[in-house]
Image (cartoon, rainbow, N blue to C red; front, side, top):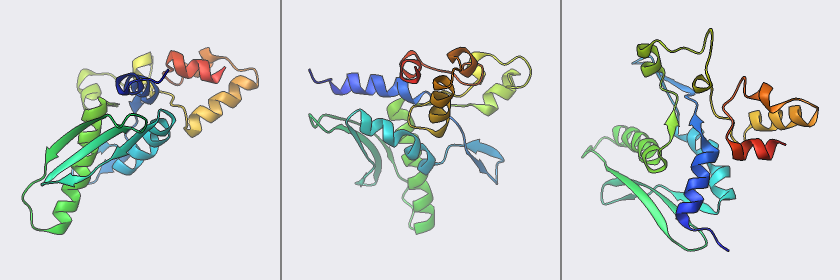
Length: 173
């Protein structure tokens, strides 16, 4: 029996987990996840769930659309681009809006360094499960964890370094 689009998206969200911020804005000195790294991270998971991501600009709106390749059903999120004539500024706005329309569409969780710092939470010292990034299938870290388990390691040890969903844990063993 085929899964519905919502069932596929539900599964996908569980597989993605928290996205690690991998880039730094030199002007504001804050971290963020780059659109290319974000897509690189989620693309294998989208494909394994039979989902297609497109990000067209239509009538001045930057969209992120996820389509179920079996049924053609889709969900989308869009943000109105600014009325900017300068191509460099328009390109920057498009990249920024692509990232945030996709983040909003999938309700992705990013490491919130600013909020954690303001709340006094850090990864140093006695880290809690919430301080770790999710272990995602299709990543180099997942492959290393899988190899570790195959060589006699434990999922408990992996959970000392990563947050691991039940589904990901079942794929490790």
